[in-house]
View 1: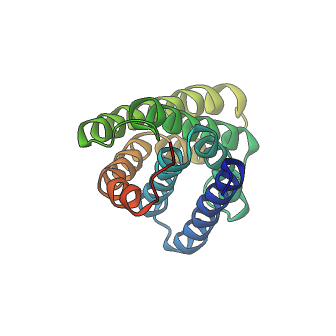
View 2: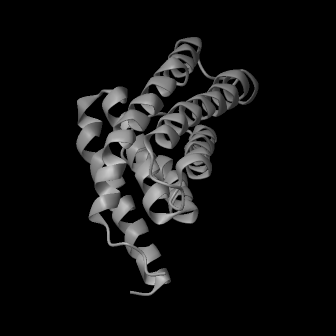
Length: 181
C-alpha cells in the first residue's frame, strides 16, 4: 500500500473511531469517560499514523463534538479545544511519536507532559482569556460552569487518556505490520 493511501486509511479509521466514541459516550453525560477516550484516540493517532494524521484528528475532534452537542456550542471555544488537542498531539509526537523507540519511559513522560501542556492551553485560552475577555456577555452561572469544565477535569482526562495509551500503544504497535526499510 502506498504511503498516502495508508495515511488516508489510518486517519479515516481514527476519525471514525473518534466519532463513534463521541456518539456512544455522549449519552453518558460524563466528561471523564468521553474526554479520556478522546485523548486516547488522539494519542494513538499521532503515535501510529504520524504527526499530520494526529493533528488532523485533533483539530476535527471538537467540530464533531459540536455536532453531537458535547460541550459548549460556541465556535470561540471550539478553536481553543482544537488548539488544546493539537498541543497534546504535538507533545506526544515529540516525546514518544511514531518514529521513537517504543519504551515505557518515553510514553509515561509524554503522558504527563502532554496532559499538563493541554491543560495549560485550555485553561489559559478559555478560563483566563475567552470567558473574561471575549465572552463577556456570558451569564455568570454559565461562565462559572465553563470555567470549571476547562480546568482540573481537563488535566484529569488527559492524564487518564495518557495512562490508557501507555497500556494500549505497545499492543497496537505490535499488531501492526513493520514498515519496510
